[in-house]
Length: 297
Image (cartoon, rainbow, N blue to C red; front, side, top):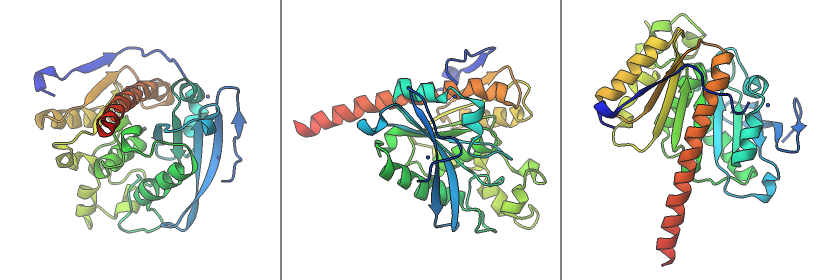
């Protein structure tokens, strides 16, 4: 995207159009439209059971090639956050026939494989173990063109981190109020427990901050959307990340909305991301159909 063509979209209000597991408990709610299950998945990399919320459209077992959106929670949160705070996610799944997966990110894991603590291997869990389980258990597309990931705050950093480093798995990534540079917050949110003291292990902090991964976005087709509230403590970091992408001519959509670092903001923002992803999934469908016709001919 050319610099002069890049637009920052400022929204005062985005209308809330929507908002509501293999051992299944915690919340096994079934409506006439969709269902929300809690699924326990064994992580070999961490030798632990990880809980996940899976939101499926109605009669999903009769469908096939369903797109999947992975939705990450923030610091001090857990796998239930999205389904509790945005209750109408299941309505979006019903209308668009997609699956939403909300994994547990552990206690402030930051969604990378910790270089100092092998009990926090969340990049491996999500990219290798969770996706494999979802694709082998549910009627998903299994094509990266039908897979996206987003999250809030810590999960916003995690979504970009995982997608940028694993572009063969995701067609698009999003971030809401994401912390793209971990270094200014070396004493916060247990980041040092995952990366080590910043003075002793500066390379860990450099290598695991999203702001330093932009070289991986050159000549890429990964679609990016991120936003931040006008009163959010992370607004400056998001602005700086946006400016870096602009300087490097990396295509992206950046949105600033009125709001703060809270669920009032994220419960609106998530649907902007979901519509963004759904549009990409529909374009992917057209491309796949076209390629199949060419092959058959």
